[in-house]
Image (cartoon, rainbow, N blue to C red; front, side):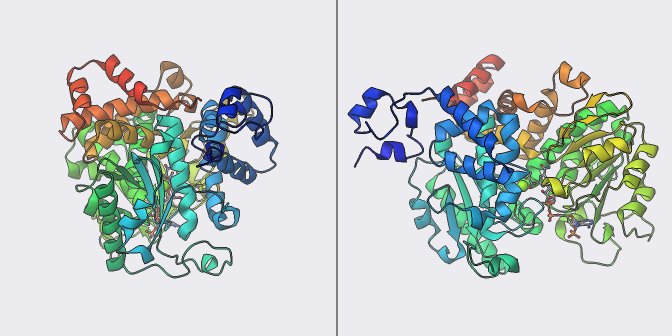
Length: 552
Ligand SMILES: NC(=O)C1=CN([C@@H]2O[C@H](COP(=O)(O)OP(=O)(O)OC[C@H]3O[C@@H](n4cnc5c(N)ncnc54)[C@H](OP(=O)(O)O)[C@@H]3O)[C@@H](O)[C@H]2O)C=CC1
Ligand SMILES: CC(=O)C(=O)O
Ligand SMILES: [Mg+2]
């Protein structure tokens, strides 16, 4: 085979950093400009090129192509400029990239696996085509609920790629051992079916029995081929997300990021917000707009915290939650057939009263905390925010829907309508707010599962966890809350600064590993011994020794 593949393969390509001797020995001499550059020089040039683009989508396309031509350079660039580039490779820009994925798709790139429903019965053979090392982790979607953008079909592939970029950048998982997968089951979105450039199957999604059979085959094939693989489900439609979790969580090493990762990250921010609010746990009243996979996932995680940290029974804990969906407050007697996951928090103490919208429910509940996971941009109106500020000294308002245009309110609106008293986190980062009266600058929190899933995945990989238990997820949440430094607390932050994400993910991974060992689900004997030795510093250095650092 020609050695030119050394520069064609993104995993080995060093481009202008290839040493002269190696150029001569590998017949690359003359194929690269004369200069021999360092990785840092290459990063400087690429950063200049990224910044010179006029739109974020162009930046996304540029970075995608860079990742597909030189993995080391892409990850060095990302890690050295994490805060600047995360909004490009992840939310909000990844949302726009998914919507337009078929149009911006570079047919020369080979970014992951596409497994179609037409491969039913032959999924194992498709997996055999994956040409690289055994992956440690896969992020898998069927594109049916991408962020708050609906059913995008195969265009959802931007999400597994984006999430895995964060696994690599934030937690230090080796890029060669990651696998993005999109299951192409068709789409029910007519616009994509009619789009001449759409790159997926032009058919509607199958009925549930076929869907579940296919998903079982995919999961069986993945774990048969790669027994230690950690599997993250992402952006499946709400009902399927819960059903798959229920069906598969005790059989495979898997978790659902939207249900469990989001639950963990929001609980973590709330642990800090509850402390800042000065209101004791037992007096919190939490109102959700959105009762889907994320809403119910987050409510369940907070409920479990009330049980563990607030000494409540599960029924007492559940009484602290009210969920609103498109039909209003979720109650048992409102007259519709509730999806299984909604029954967990459906109210029965409403004395026959029904509340059709957020405003009337807010008056009924008088919450201390308002959480948006509804996909509906702007529904936390100035009036709603103002009312939260009348009811609470420090109202907690988390508009968590993604991408930015779906956020239930902006940081600016939350600050302006609460006399800057709001405790705030959003799913996609907003800019800081300067109070015109005092000129004081305030910083918003970002309540996004990207703070926890890299650490959960890393911990599960290193422990070789056979399953990912509820307490491994819970522990990631408490660990994240505990990473806040005194400086961050005094700056009013609810989440650590993004610049510390590697350190934070390492600390989360350590706690996840300890929990896996405690529960007897860690298959890695070395990790079991290490955890049992009870030496925190050694455990942290072990994790660090396994982390990927992009260098030639
Ligand atoms: N910040 C983060 O880390 C995360 C954010 N998210 C975001 O959360 C959002 C929801 O995700 P997910 O729960 O998985 O989606 P689902 O589709 O499962 O749920 C959406 C929920 O919102 C409700 N809803 C929709 N429109 C309205 C409306 N006008 N009024 C009241 N309720 C409404 C739906 O009601 P009904 O059930 O009646 O249809 C449903 O209960 C997305 O935007 C996603 O990006 C998700 C995961 C992580
Ligand atoms: C962040 C995320 O997972 C979502 O919005 O779906
Ligand atoms: Mg998601």
